[in-house]
Amino acid sequence: LMLLYHLHGMHKAARKRLLSGKDGGAAGSAASGSNGPPNGMRSGSKCDSSMQEGRSRSSKIELAMADWTQLLNYANEAAQSETWQLPPEDLFLRILSQINRSKRDILQEKYNQCRDVSTSPATRSVFIRVLKRIAESFMSCLHSMQSG
Image (cartoon, rainbow, N blue to C red):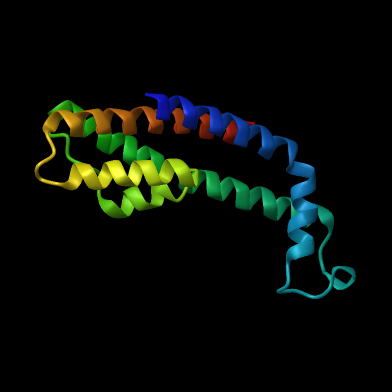
């Protein structure tokens, strides 16, 4: 439960950073782009760059939402059927890549622990419920990021 509260707090802080860095982000990504001509020779305007960045951000949010929705659906199904089956590893790894490193390590350790056949169903059920709450929290935040 503490992990959930911590992740939710981190996500709020990340959202604030994202919202406050909108103006500075476009300049930073344009300056670091090395695949095109130098800044003075770039075709397209600052508006084009902002539109591309907006689409990119929107696309990333949509991809993240798809992953978190899939995890939430999987966790809901596991809880309803009381099988406490873990999500597929490829989905779990995609989810982990979207989380802070220290929390990623904790979740990976718990996932590995739950994969062990000697782990009790009660332990798995707690882990699935935690994943479900984390997914709900992230989905809520992603919805607000998408609409804002």
